[in-house]
Length: 127
Figure 1 (cartoon, helix red, strand yellow):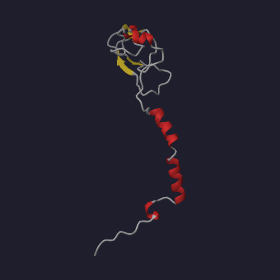
Figure 2 (cartoon, helix red, strand yellow; figure 1 turned 180 degrees about the vertical axis):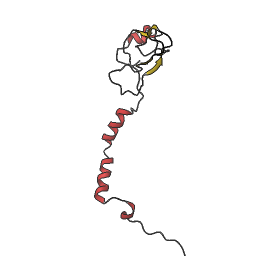
Figure 3 (cartoon, helix red, strand yellow; figure 1 turned 90 degrees about the vertical axis):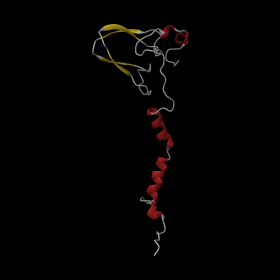
Figure 4 (spheres, one colour; figure 1 turned 120 degrees about the horizontal axis):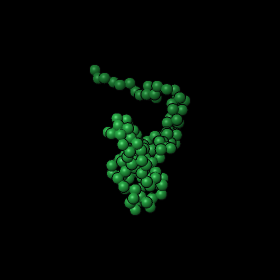
């Protein structure tokens, strides 16, 4: 005896009544709402750091204390996708922290702010 599958009907496929199913589809099709929410938290293009200042700031670090250095240059708006750089001071001393965000030794200034590229850039724009 061969096994016969019962014919499929819309009642056996969907667990919701038609009017509920249509409302679910309408809500899912509102891509603008979903897209805008996702775009805020997950930008399509990676965020880039912007020049916050064109000179470093001097800070007194205390040995053993943990600090966070803004890696984006947009400290007022933290939804950039760039997280602060967490670091621990090895010794108590005064250091120059980079604010142009172009240093090769983050968070410390390496003099990159003196370059023509940084000096020509507008504060608040990426390099």
